[in-house]
Length: 349
Image: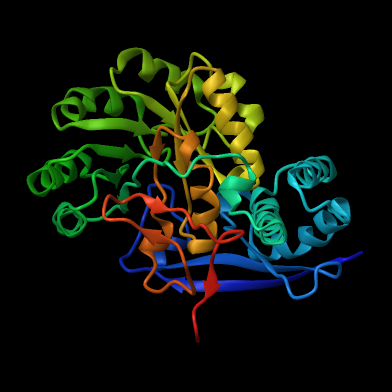
């Protein structure tokens, strides 16, 4: 086999504590992500870099990624350095094992980076996508209302803020944020609300200029999501309920929008298909991320032209990013590189 992978697990400090309603390791002030380097014996001197963020909620860890990657490499074989080769690799990974979106994401992004370098094309050009993408919002985790408002004031240059909900002071938090920020607000409860509390909040969410409500209820409670969407003038967006492309059909008539993340669905190729299918089904599309480095965010940005809303701030939440090359413009849109592949490099140690 000509493909070889080196895996590196990174434990990265966050700029601010980042807590969500369903607790995870990011609550401690750090994030764990996995970066890989992909080499092909047929392409000496070229390296493709990829990233997969292992979220315990979806049953993935750095160890599961390490266990699954050899199986994925064997399935991929020796892909043709072309879009057809990328599509064949995606299909081979899907056929060999279900789930494991983060592991597939790492390899998929690395293949895109490597084949982009072989062909001389930036990833978005390689996949026939536009560099005209929406601006990203900026996300603020759960905390005391005064703390959230202070962080919102620091991020007030962003056109939109995303505020994590699901704590005991949700309304007070939003009131405090509105005191320091005049733009649209997106709220994300990460499965942390109860139906009665959510419907009672709707008038205040509308009054305070909330743009959308993300995943208010547990992933499998599609009945509750449908019930709230029927009562809400704001779009309800499925995140934890919408992991793979196969989930989309079951959400028709349940919610108005879906959140697609590369680390959930398996990378650039699967995200492209999922966003396109979501539009065919009439959904508004939200492109999200984890607390990733520029590798994961650059991979996501390559498909961002297919999204209505963009939440690609993961690398901005880190105290330090080991990669460079992705630039955020003054309009808070990621500027896609004109260099082959992802256009990234490792920062000097």
